[in-house]
Amino acid sequence: MRYVSAMSPTIAIIGRPNVGKSSLFNRLVGRRIAIVDDTPGVTRDRKEAEARIAGRNVRLLDTAGLEEATPETIAGRMRASSEAAVRESDLVLFVIDARSGLTPADRAFADWLRRQPVPVVLVANKTEGRLGGYAAMEAYELGLGDPIAVSAEHGDGMGELHDAVREYLPDEDEEKSRDRADRPLRLAIIGRPNAGKSTLLNRLLGEERMITGPEPGLTRDSVAVEWTDATGGKVRLVDTAGLRKKARIEQALEKMSAAASIAALKECEVAILVVDALLGMEEQELRLARLAEREGRAVVIALNKWDAVEDREATRRRLEDTLMTSLTQLRGIPVVPLSAQTGRGADRLMPAVREAYALWNRRIGTGELNRWFETMLARHPTPLVEGRRIKLRYATMPKARPPTIVVFGTRAETLPEDYRRYLVNGFREAFGMSGVPIRLQLRGTSNPYADEE
Image 1 (spheres, helix red, strand yellow):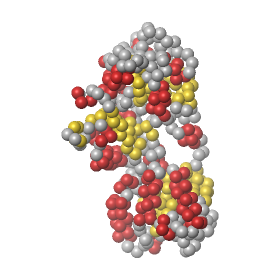
Image 2 (cartoon, helix red, strand yellow):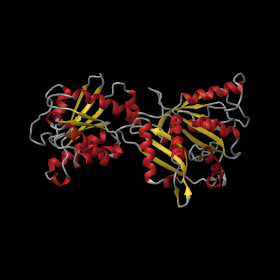
Image 3 (cartoon, helix red, strand yellow):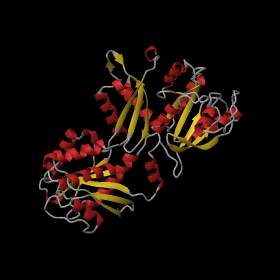
Image 4 (tube, helix red, strand yellow):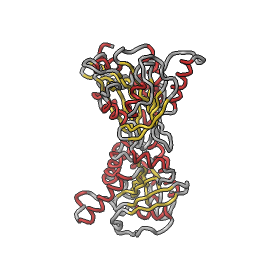
């Protein structure tokens, strides 16, 4: 999803003429701005207004009706204006008239929308009455996910629409931080006691900021430090107290240290996991990496004390085998061998962190994502579950931080675990998402027409 910098997220309402776009616009804005009439084509120019949706301020666009027409006609120019609104928007509300049913124009514009790099919420309008919700079910065949049944005229279904929109909006704190160009990258250094975390921090800072020594556990609390790395970017670095196995966390002070480490991990964006190259990647490091993955954080491994390793080739192989077998959910995690004590190799650490951060923030457009998705389905069709084929129809990426894919389809929630891994690994490989957590969410449908297709 794309966001307009220094502005509220932009949402465009589109659809063919007379489906109730302006009524929905007025309802969401909370006052009558757009002229509403049963005559098709009343709205010719785009209107915009600030609205409050899902607890967020957004910029709402009311567009002219989409019609198949040549560019030189009024209808053609109206369509061009609506298409331009889609290109500058962060989210589209595609409105259909559930009362009159789907038309060839609805299907054509749905096909066009699926190729655009912007997420879509399908809104089935005019669903008032007892049969309204059932009438909306036909909209499943458009392949745009679950239709939200509303009546813009009577205000029905607005809560469900707000909930659907909320999934595609960034957190308010996230958006504010994005608007501050000088916001530092939030980085945590994690690892077992005496792995060299504080020595590494001192090396990155270029000063003896932290007390270091051979005694494990010198750092008791998490210490926040702000600095500027060689790329000119600001970093807020947190050096954490070492985490030990739970059975060894006996003293109250060490319990607080462990809690502070976990809190720092939850607040960061990228975590540097410091591994003692002489000891290798053991269960304590794996536990920390899994915790970082569960929290959705990007991870870079700093393989410290590399200068003291005698058989480097064997050490690399052991580490690669451990990561391959025990940390598949972070496949391709970057590893930077270095010596925090001498500084050798440390200059490669922050570039690796910046690259992991960029991948963690990366969004894939809906069109590009669905071309990949169709290739994956063609390469390996979905399996049979209880003798019935699972029909996956459409994928979107509503958010990054970490990258999150939402797949829609009939009985999608029954997709076996091995096929889910196939999709995640394929996504990671196709878009170069090495070493970052990837979330896959499945949205099943209760489409009554699904088994008749």
